[in-house]
Amino acid sequence: MSAIEIKELTKRYKDLTAVDRLNLTIGEGELFSLLGVNGAGKTTTIKMLSCLTRPSGGDALLNGKSILHDSGGVKSIIAVSPQETAVAPLLSVRENLALMAGIHGMSKAETAEKIASLSEKLGLDTVLSRRAGKLSGGWQRRLSIAMALISDPEILFLDEPTLGLDVLARSELWDLIRSLKGRMTIVLTTHYMEEAEALSDRTGIMKSGRLIAVGTPAEINARAGTERFEEAFVKLVKEAE
Amino acid sequence: MRMLSYSLRTAKEILRDPLNLGFGLGFPLVLLFLLSAIQANIPVSLFELEMLTPGLTVFGLAFMTLFSAALIAKDRSSSLLQRLYTTPLRPADYILGYMLPVLPISAAQCVLCYLAAACLGLKLTVNVLWAVLLLIPAEIFFIALGLLCGSVLTDKQVGGICGALLTNLTAWLSGVWFDLDLVGGAFKAIAYALPFVHAVEMERAVLVGNFGAIWPHLLWVLAYAAVALVAAVLLFLRQMRRQ
Image (cartoon, rainbow over the protein chains, first blue to last red):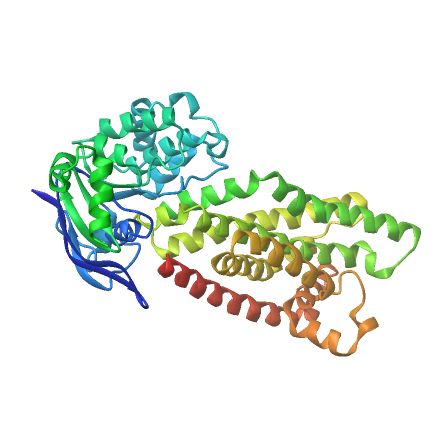
């Protein structure tokens, strides 16, 4: 069963077409990575799918709910961890999580239970009382993902989740993302080829707003006739120019 | 419930910033003590507690604009608002969530000013309570201005426009530091076309129990508060759409 069905999705800004007639289906429980160089249209696609930006054309159904006609319904089943960490810096980790729980209408008891289980799963127990703004980049990303997970979303968008992190923090975050696989549908955007290769069930490569290739990393390697995924990416993007 | 969660967060973020506490609550008190000391040595009627304290309570509200605007602009630049726009929060939840918590903080600042003035010799009467209550329209004006500035300015611009320009406008055009009649002319006309001096004169009248003299000042403040509120809501909704 498909979780996301994108049909002819387009976004135009005056004379720039950021996303050009995107068609894509993502399965339930799948981890799908959107790859592309800067300005390829990845973030704009996520913004449209999460109802932050209204498309200029086309539509997308998220578990059957239209981003055009049922944005409230879409918002009730998704969560986004934006490119920037997007945490409240002067609140503690616990308070940040409680804020998101409150915004989703959870009771005090539900909130406490949710914070306890999430912090255990994501290893946040040791920093629950620390102010979010004082945490390292890796911990802030972890908190950012925890804030997205608090509502038990059916679809999770992770926009460049490891951008700017050191190797160790990135590896830890990969483990965290792997642990979420299968429990929800995940759409991830990234600049890092090895990240997409290591985590994704399938990847899509975008160039100038268009989707130029879709498949498993192995399928994309086969299509490009290369052995390494990064080489396949470079070759396909150059061919599309 | 959702709005309350957001309000609680706004209050915590504002009150946990030491600069906010220093400037918002501390600075008007420092001015009160300093000007009272000057007045004790060189008597100036403008700096008598009955004149000075209402003026300082209005001047202190300029910092509420700064706090609100800085928080909103920072939320926009850090993408926290972008994250929240993908949640079931409605526009009214954001607007009230940003504005409501600043009201009790503004009222607390006003009460602190009067308590400090009482320590210096101001007689605490029921009029002080009326002065605190009748300051609410001015509080709404300044808080709405914060929502407006936070919706259109970057966090760096907020520092300049709200931190420097608005505090100076409030100081110069409110008649707190000098009698506007001394300057007169266009300066006085501009001052009386803006709400600051009206808020101060209304508060001074209330404090001495001259309730008949609150008109037309209260109408000026109410009108400005209404206009600022409508403009702030419209501009906040516009930036929401632009996100």
